[in-house]
Amino acid sequence: MPFEIDKCEGFALRSAHGIEEKMRKVSEKDFGKYIRWARDNTANNVYPCSIAEGIQSGDIYVNDDVETVFFWHYCGFGYISGKPSDEFLNDICLRMISNHNERRLVLITSDDEVTDFFRDKEVLLDSRLEYSYLSHKFIGETDINDFRIERIDEMNLSKIEGRIIPSFSWASPEQFLKEGFGYIALDQGQVCAVSFSAAVSSDEIDIGVETHEDYRGKGLAAVLSDRMCEHILEVGKKPVWAHSSSNLGSMKTALKCGFVQDKINTVIRKNDLYEEE
Image 1 (cartoon, rainbow, N blue to C red):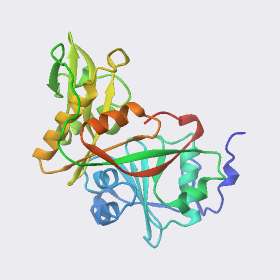
Image 2 (cartoon, rainbow, N blue to C red):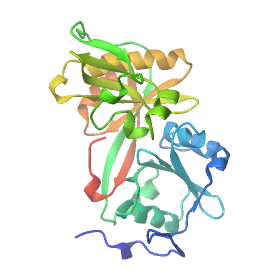
Image 3 (cartoon, rainbow, N blue to C red):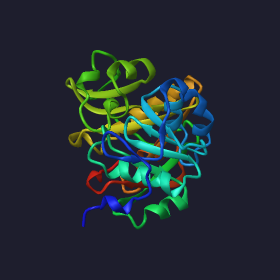
């Protein structure tokens, strides 16, 4: 049975898209006021901070008393800081199931009370493994002599195809080239793997990877991601990594590159948007 709108109740306002709201959208010029809230998020810091610090695109919402802050990244990931009321969560629920959103909403949380709120809603619950970087120690052997490694630039960016690529989390090529970076592996001019900065804050960089299905199992993602880690450390930041609990390939790559599992978050999403992250 599809999710019924009347399962999320208690709203006072209605947006142009028909979504009744308790959350108030923050003006972009005031994003900096919420950096502390972003840093205090218990599920993840780099995605909320990337918005609050003005590095990547997204939205910030607060309740009237500014006791709860919701960060909605361009890629669709959402994070709640503070203790949300049921009304606040109802608003997020409606946005998640709405067919009028300009982008998806995938809520990622470490708060058991938030997870419990959504258990009786017809949404999908999954888990997401978050990693910390232990040391710069690449574990594994990969022969990349048959591939050319290039840093992503304005000349090769348009050649990158797939889902987890820079356009997944950056609003424009210009924004990515200014604030982000990454590497690609090429085979006779074809991009066969990519590793890039999926989220960037003043302290951390989250690494996104994708390998073309014809080139999987060759260790290319690990080689490119190890190079990412080197550069992230060179600029004085911390590499971070996360993936769906079912993504064993991403887990193997993370461990090869020196990451260790830090925590497990809950992922909440609309039924018909279920995809691997």
